[in-house]
Length: 103
Ligand SMILES: [Zn+2]
Image (cartoon, rainbow, N blue to C red; front, top):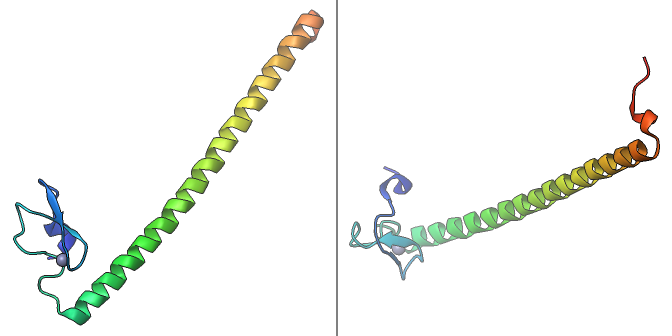
């Protein structure tokens, strides 16, 4: 059974001094991540954990940039809509017949 399906956050957690990962104190007496690993397997686990952190940080940066671009597009769209509405209102005030369509 994979570790991720065995770990549920149900209560206070404690950080393992050996691997640095957290475990729920009420559910695990020993660390479910590293208690059955030897030193070489622990090194692989730590390398994998660090690689996952780097990938998550890169994903976070990409999502931040996407959010900034989305906000910029929304603000630009809002400015265009407000400018067009203001321009249309000004034309209707200065020349009331301009806003009436001729058929
Ligand atoms: Zn551990």
